[in-house]
Image (cartoon, rainbow, N blue to C red):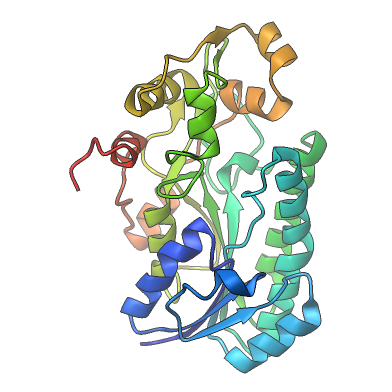
Length: 312
């Protein structure tokens, strides 16, 4: 049955992939973004330039849109400075997402789908983590600020009366126009030999292609229980595995190797953490409850497609 859907963060990498899929299924789509000039290219039923930090404007727009489902795909991870990106995204989650939830409830929406991330889990041993694993709320620095904001949003989301809350915890998003695509930040760092192997390289990353991020949202517009879902591929990978493979596919030099001591003196804390101690995530709940299968089951094929090495 066609639904009325509002998408915040409509011009982001997941939003741009999601919008045409919603239209193909006959849903009425209202797209929200902060800047009007970025909305003009979107093929949707209605567009609105609105700041998620402006609760009054949000309330007016959502009452006008009268949505059944509200989807939040907003972030500030496109900021050039990584620390600024963390700070702005934490603020956007803590205030913007909650403003959007308030407006969704006021407008009578039945379901709210938020964006989380598996990188927020507290690292623990060598486990691949499931949705009941704790978030790393006492993590240091601005990374800790972001994790605490995510945890606060989910606590609010899952306890709200009158609306069903779903949090999609993505792995590292890759695909067209992401940091992993040619010209993106990760690509530039690998090509420039600025992303090394550190120590044993046992930090695990779970990857999520933007196609799968958008596809899961379609499945959860009405189906599936409220709660958190890890949206990741089937193959968490250690940095010692995925980083050299990515470099080869990109035609870049092999990553240099650093000791832990060298890395701590040359790299930021978050990069060292991701490469050495971060844990991957399991998609078991999503597969078992919805019968979901990622269209890109492994980052290997997904990375190859970025560089024209995989059949269309």
